[in-house]
Image (cartoon, rainbow, N blue to C red; front, side, top):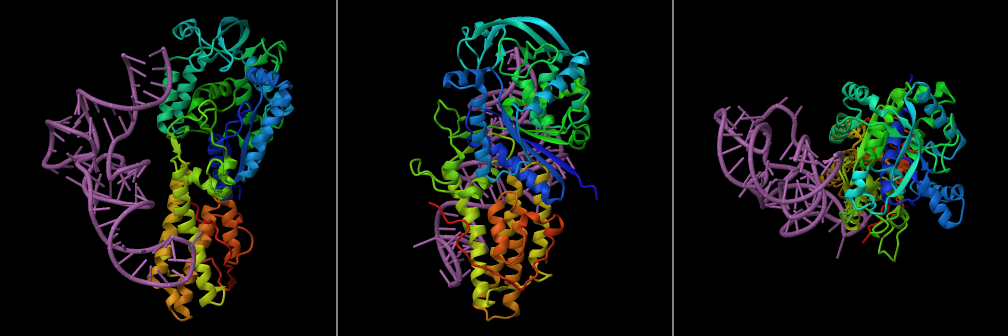
Length: 512
RNA sequence: GGCGGCGUAGCUCAGGUGGUCAGAGCACUCGGCUCAUAAUCGAGUUGUCGUGGGUUCGAGUCCCACCGCCGCCA
């Protein structure tokens, strides 16, 4: 059957900054979504990458005495390393300095140009290098000649710019939003985007002559495209825009863009407008999330509150961090904060949640079941009862879990899945198989518990790829949890019994 | 200044179209169990659902005002 397709993206990360848990937050969620959709048997494409052009990179490189390309190479590599550490299953990693991207950007903007939506004008005004954006004289004066965002002095720039006639898209965008009420999630963010559009849109400058580190404007090579229009295009480069029309058609526009609220304007206004101007359909869905705060504050280099994934995965004595492992890390960022509002990371909160959900509930369930199977069933796991009271719970849990993933709500999805774990612990207490003599009664209870572990392993595999694979193996099943297909694999009663159950070391050792 | 939103147990939060809506998890208390990673299970406490009015037979749930917090835009 021609399965559905699921295309998910993270923003591409700018290579002036090394990867911290804010980057990881978005990327882990995208990864879990991709894994969930693979479980559903959907053809899935998961894209992340790095954004490497622009004056800021040019300057950082110069300061480091290296070429911009070298600068980009080094930092881009840092991102790839972290994603590898975190078990990120991206299908592609795009870099905006790749030739395929140059071709794609040039093709897209040439098309927009051919369609009459790009125009050359002279521009001058106060410019912030850090923002790579012009400000109005009024804004400049109001902030004493400094950037409203960075507080650093604005520089006077004057150059010929190509302008994108964004103003002509006010109405088309409003119509698109009207026709696609769920395109931007959550609704509050949709309203913000609509607010921006309703105010009326002005044409925007999309090229620079003052810098060289960018993609040349094809019809006027003295110009390079402003980094943002270069960056947004990555989402279509990776699926063959301008190079492989057939491939492009298969993946576009059924895309889910994940993005932080700071880049809402670019994604929810400029990007759809650019696509409309090129005669391409806007993206199917834009999922906007809040900031991941640390101690209630935005992470920043100057505030010294950045946290790096490896310090939590492997532990860091100096910082007093325990080693949560890859899955412990992933679980925290998927489970602790609802997707959408700002979330606040705290080490204490992470520790509490890890111990409660992973060590006590899930890890300990596996541990106690394995022990009793060893002592009462000779180490061979019995089959579940078809009429188990847990069967109904499992069905409800699957439905809730699936609905939550479909709504891009990983925290709710995991919360729903964990209900099955609690019910299984409760079921064990109710029947106390460790007190019974070996026999059908013991087999029934333990078979049910093993079946819960099987189902949980599948449902939690997008969050915990490594440990669910381990559970799968320890209860004697072959293959991996991630290879299963939903919804079939969530049906009650598939654990066959007669398999060797292995005790093994604690899956999630308690941390203090 | 314009437009959104928020304020529910100690903590983090659920609670479409008003009538088991007073909830979940964590924390806490008591009790059980001792298979298990001092894990687990059961029971329970805490709330004037920001404040004051209003509509209604009946309002966290609708309306108005106010207080406090925040976001976006200008």
